[in-house]
Amino acid sequence: MRMKLSKSSQLVLVAAASLAVASLITACQQVTQTLTVDFVYVASALAAGANQYGEIDVFEINSESGKMRQIPTSPFPSEGRNPVAEAVSTDYQNLFVVNHDDNSIVQFVIGIDGKIYPYNTVNTPGIYPMSIAVSKSAVFVLDTYQPLPLCSPVDPCSGSIAVYPLSAATQSAPVGMQNPAMNPAVNGQYWPLTIPSAPNDVIVPTAVNVLASDAYVYVTAYDSTTPSPVGYVFAFSVGSNGVLTAVPGSPFAAGAQPSAVSSDSKSSYVYVADSRNGNVLGFSVGSNGALTALSGSPYPAGNGPSAIVVNPTYPYVYVTNALDATVTAYSIGNSGALTQIGDYATGLQPVAIGIDPSTNRFLFTANFLGNTVSNFQLSPTTGTLLNAQASPYSSNTNPTAAVAIPHDGSGGGIQPQ
Image (cartoon, rainbow, N blue to C red; front, side):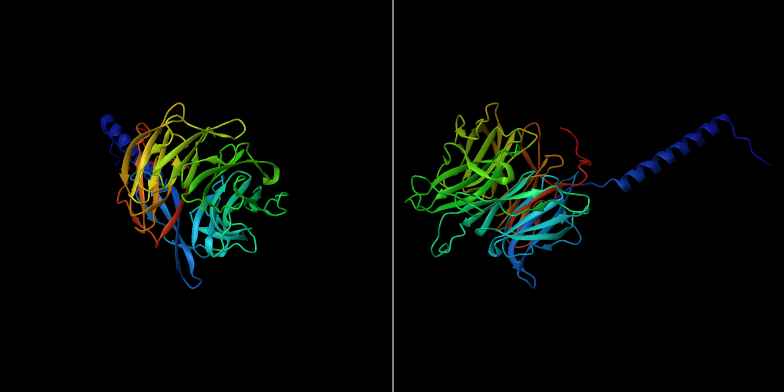
C-alpha cells in the first residue's frame, strides 16, 4: 500500500532535501578551503643539531584570527651556521637564506605545503654576508668585508655588494643562481662600498633593497672610521647580467648609523631607519635613481630602529624599535612624507619585520631576545595595528629574520573594513 502525501507535505520534503544538499556543499567547501593565508619563515641564529646549523621555523597564518602556528614538520635546518637574513623569489617558489659564519647563501625550494627543501648552496665573494634582496632577475647580497687577503675582524676593511643573475624557472627546475656578475673596475665579482673622498675609511654595510621596478638597488652603510659614525645610502643602477653602475651623486648622506632600508611598490620612495638617531629618513627617487630628501625628513621613531617595511597595497610604513620592543606606524602622504600613527608593543628586541603578501593585512616581527614572533592585523583604513590571537608565538632561540609567501592567495576569512 502506498501512502499519498499532501501537497504541503511534499513541499516540506523538497525544502528539507534542498537544505541537506546545501549543507553538504557548504561542508565540502569548508573541508576543501584552507584558512591558511600565508606561510612565514623565521630564521633563528643559535646553533642547533648535529651540524650546529641554525633553524628555520615555518609558521602558517590563520586568515580569520591571524593566529600563527608552526607546521607539523617545522623547524628545518638552515643548512649553515648563524643564519642572519632571508628573502624569497618573486614567484614565491624559493627561499634564500644567508648563513653568516659559513659565507653562504642556501636556496630552498618551497613545497605547496610550506615545507622547504635545500636545492643549492653558493659561497659569497666576500666575507661574512649579512643582508640579501631578490628581484625578478637577480639576487643581491652584502658582505661585511671585501674579498681581500688582509680583511678580517682583526683588520677590518669596507664591505661590498655582489650580484647573482637568476636563470628563469622551468617546469623541471626552479630559478637558478648563476655565477656572480663581474665588476671590471676591480676585476672581481663584487662592488666595493667606499667613499671617494675617504677611500681608506672602513664602511660597514647594514642592509640592501632593490626597487620593485628592478632598475635600482640601494645599500645602507656607515663610516666607522670617523669619531662619530656617518651614514650613507649607496645607489646603483642594475644593468644587463647584473652589472652595477653607481648612480650620480652616490653615496647619499643618511643620518648617522642607518640600519634598514625599504621602498614602496611604485618605486617612488625609499625609507631608511637610523638606529643611532632614532628616526626614519625619507627620500624620493629621481629618474636616474638619485635620492632627494623628502619634506620633513627625518621623522621621529623609537629607540634603536632596526627594521622597516612599506605596505605594498596600503599607504603605511612600519618600523621596529629594538630597544623599545615596539613597532612605530606611519601613514604616507601624497608627497611621500610620513605622519606617525602610533606605537605598538612587540616581543623583546624586534629585529626583523614583514607583511603578509597574500592580503597585506598581517604584519609580523621576529623578536631576537624574546625568542618569539609577534603578529598583528592592520587596518587598511587607518594603519593601526591589533594583536592577532595568542600573539606572540614561541620560536627557536634568537630569531633574526622573517619573510612570507602567500598560500593560494585566497585570503580565506579576511573581510574588508
